[in-house]
Image (cartoon, rainbow, N blue to C red; front, side, top):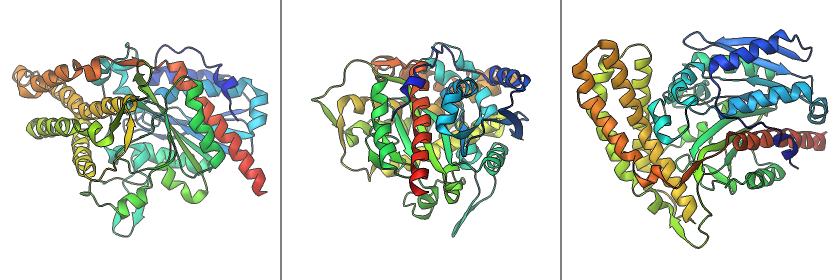
Length: 446
């Protein structure tokens, strides 16, 4: 079962949307006074941005779709805008799926604003990193749900997470979709339980859009593969309870963990900004250990630069600068955890093209904190009007390191931009297929 006939209607998007642009569309939707539409405020961001729940239809099933669970991943915002328009105009599709559809366009509006510098630019790694922001784990909307288990407690939900909790309370979702996108590689999915027909269908879908599957997913997430490209979602409770690495987890439950006792089916769809160019190398392979071997040096470089410059910058940070400093510290802790996990990785052998994609992705992950460190130094020096700080090693060394890294063949060749239409189409197909198959499962139980 596929909904490619609907996904093929996705327009050729040229740019990613800003918060203000999405809000204009929400206001226009509200002005329609459509009988199948309701819009309600479920909370605010820490900076006071409204977070709204848009509901369409009167189906028996309840689906909640959430955009920007990470604010550097806005492709899902386009998916939501398309589906809002589709469900308003396609009565047959609404009736076929028999769901009420609920949408939060951006659960991290403050963070999305901090990424706006690259949303309208031709997207390449340099532009992306120049204006990159991603908050610390214990500030993220998707990982600050309450979590109280023996030996561990987290109750400091972010304002954005409180809004998400309110949306869940209102909707009681049968289907919860967290709309992610990766930086490089192929398409992969997380599901909260194995519906065998759906798992098989998801594994087939990317090929219909000329996209590769990512058979590794997130190499440090300790996930369970169901089929190539489809994984069981990480279980935060299990991770915290059985963590053998140096304890770096300091956040709360995930949205999937929070809704587990409701019987909610969770789906996360990861589509990349960039993919490998050229045909896959069918007769060449790489081990996962060889793929990650250069990352040891990348990790050392990142940790060294952060340790050298962040303490001084953190002491004079103000406002959003503090969020940058906390995020950099958090990324440093995650890098340390990854270095421990590398020692326990299985002897996995992958096609060379998949291995190269994984290397590029890991390289970007290690450049993220350096890019944010450069941005933090620049923000502070501009605010203080301190030319000495602007020219000192914090800004200069991070800028020089990024310039050198971005000139490497790893990030300067062999990769191409994935059309936004392709990524959105894949997300649309996966969402509608999941809803349809959940209906089949419900009928079989009744």
